[in-house]
Length: 251
Ligand code: GLP
Image 1 (spheres, rainbow, N blue to C red):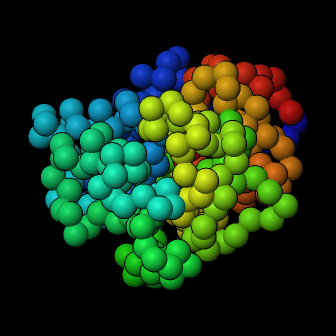
Image 2 (image 1 turned 60 degrees about the horizontal axis):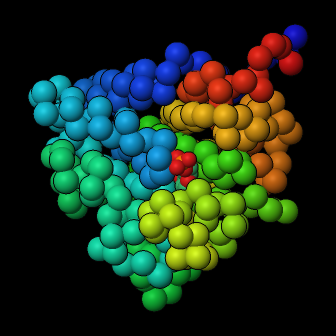
């Protein structure tokens, strides 16, 4: 029997996984108050952010020295656009905890020159020493951050053309109107994800099952970008039974 390259942990419910994940983040901050944290958007981490806010309100975690880098941003949207990923983070986490604004980092979707903005972001991340802990979600098509499936993938931060499927995934940020979702985004590249010292990837629900199976058991291929995480060595995949159902039984 072959062992999986990724450690999979199946939780009884999405809520249980979210509160364990928030507790893990809080512990990591206690152990290293200047933690550099990589953060995703999407529906998946919402309960984690809610739990982190609750832990902060109870005085159980102090974010004052923590640095954050978000994974991606829509191209063309300024940070204060209510549909931007930056605005999402403000609503669900940043406004409610004591992160220092100068230690919150984001790709600027409204930057005039996208390529230059990506280089700036990679330099900023490298200067911070890379990510200590990275939380990830996964798209039903196997994308992580906005590293989209294709014939090849890019190591560095880059501009990504969004597939229709990925635009559908984030349509809720645009009043459920997929046509309002920008056609492109800026995203961290695979190199930043693979260099993170520890990764927790969360996936819940049956529509993530195919992507989870391809990521954990499939060949490493840019057609399923998350499969590159098999090369990492310190990735935990936290799923509920629905997202993990393709992994039943040994390989
Ligand atoms: C978006 C983000 C990803 C996220 C994915 C899944 O496209 N760029 O970082 O993991 O969607 O979203 P959800 O958690 O809503 O299923």
